[in-house]
Image (cartoon, rainbow, N blue to C red):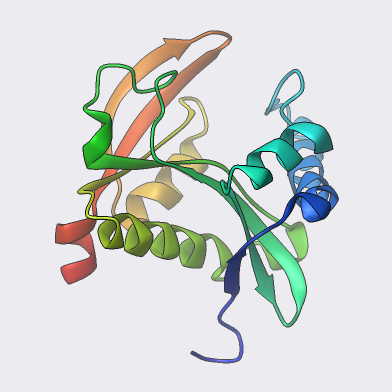
Length: 171
């Protein structure tokens, strides 16, 4: 691993403020560009702490600094209710601090999630994003995610993507 490769680790509930800060920074940046993200209580430290207690929140660190985060879960009945859950893992709230944008943090987080998915014996890594976010969709597609479908989920109109971890990590 090179010195610039992020280290990805699970957080504990006491580190929820760090992740909340990363998510709030990303949400603020998006809001400034007219793209609202994460509504209601999604960014509250208490909610993040509960997810951390459940083992769902991971932090990427570069040079000892928090650089990015994601939520990794083994089911997603809200965004993917029709899918056979045991064949997949799901990521949400992937965010990178602005000072690390354009580097390798997001791809390192996605690669880590894909490797973990395959290590758990699951075939697909799935995610969703606002359908109107063309640049973000392009990031996922460059990584190897394939567009699956679009879906209205509450206030969100999302594009859903899947990554075949067996095919993708072997190429």
